[in-house]
Amino acid sequence: MSERVIVFDTTLRDGEQSPGASMNAAEKLRLARQLEKLAVDVIEAGFPASSPGDFESVKMIAQKVRNVGVAALARTSKDDIDQAWGAVCDAARPRIHVFVATSDIHLRHKLKMSREEVLKEAVEAVKYAKRFTNDVEFSTEDGTRSDRDFLCKVFEAVIEAGATTVNLPDTVGYTLPEEFYGLVRYVERYTPNIHKAIMSVHCHNDLGLATANTLAGLRAGARQAEVTINGIGERAGNTSLEEVAMALFTRKDLTGFTTGIRTSEIYPTSRLVSMITGIVVQPNKAVVGANAFAHEAGIHQDGVLKNPMTYEIMRPETVGLSSNKLVMGKHSGRHAFRKKLEQLGYEFKEEEFNRLFKKFKELADKRKELLDEDIEALIGEEVLRSNEEYQLVYLNVVSGTVAVPTATVKLKVKGEEKQGAGFGVGPIDAAFNTISKLVGSKAKLLRFTVNAITGGMDAQGEVTVRLQENGLVALGKGADPDIITASAKAYVNGLNRLEYLKRNPAFLAKDTVV
Ligand code: KIV
Ligand code: ZN
Picture 1 (tube, protein in one colour):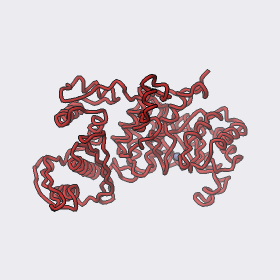
Picture 2 (cartoon, helix red, strand yellow):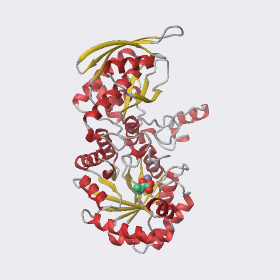
Picture 3 (cartoon, helix red, strand yellow):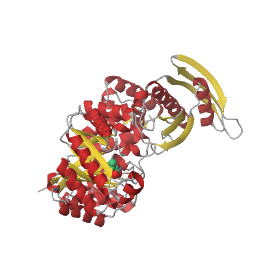
Picture 4 (tube, helix red, strand yellow):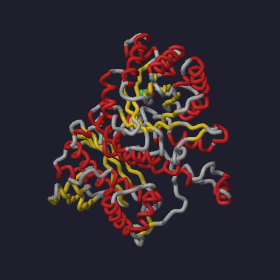
């Protein structure tokens, strides 16, 4: 008999707390729809009291994503809970998630409250949240560094007050699997009414043990795992959804657990998160890294060719990496291109599809064969397209060991063509300076990263930039076989997104990144 684990995805809330991972409302909705396709049980869509932008995006997700639960985070204050409810009230299955710290170190230095005061506040908050919905989750922040008996006392009291899920977070990623197993068992044993609620675990990865701790928590009796895609999150991140889902799937024989996760959506979801946040997945990352299914050693390659199971504990297709690769090139038509997008796990509206198809044809004209990664780079540009106030029409650069790097750029600025030239310390700097001059931007370049999408001399380069202007920060992406063109595209994309932000203050996320 297998037991079902509830997958609570917090990519949009805790994941968004990763340095530089903020997303705008449209991107959050796109990701929420993908999480729905992945079939998580609950999406924690945000922390509405943290900013008007977060409130708006949680509200939009609650209204539009109908097949999964939608949770909103709140501290124990009535105002936070009111805002959480205001944001999730339209959801098909709304949840209010209230938290307060329970460790002495947090009580003494952060909250300046006694244990009795925290207990009282926790109970009042849960009772207040219960007025709005039956589905109330309560978390004891810094749970793993809290006094065990106090933890049990808090859990007992909040369950009595109506909490239907109680969550034990390892907020600072401090615990070890054996210890966490023991703690969850202790809570299960010494919280008299624990059977009236679902026990949940929420681990951080500061010691690289988040997945191991989560699995230990499940083995000890928890039935909800709080996770994020690619493990993004505060500091070293949260437990990775893909690791927990695939560990349970692959070792069902040992754990006896199942989840509702549609595993073939794991890889497309991972790529989408990476594209939206600009956070690259390390190549050796379990399950979704570029090397996760690559075999380098001769003995391994020989074994895999004879039988994949010699060195593969799971099949790439199971996580959504297609082995049956439809090779795309300049002769591929609309039908094949649509099929390829489907294979990669993406759906686009007709207008978006047409734009993508045009870009695909342009790229296919330059290269013989396009790999999945090339097509994903095009999709990345499409996903990050906000408005097209500025369009790159033409770029020419002169550079070399003796020449002063010079760029000539033609841009469409609000429909009007503008041309100019400028210098820089290198060709990319020259292109950026010229673009800035043409649009009159004072944006500062905070980050510039280049990623070679595929191998080979004609590989596409994917560039990500982070731009800052007047306290606003925007991400820009561009891909092209020419790295300087890719950089210029990324820069223009970032400027467009800054403009979008200036005109749509409601979309401001808490640290104002779009
Ligand atoms: O890590 C943590 O303690 C949290 C809580 C808000 C659940 O994210
Ligand atoms: Zn957390």
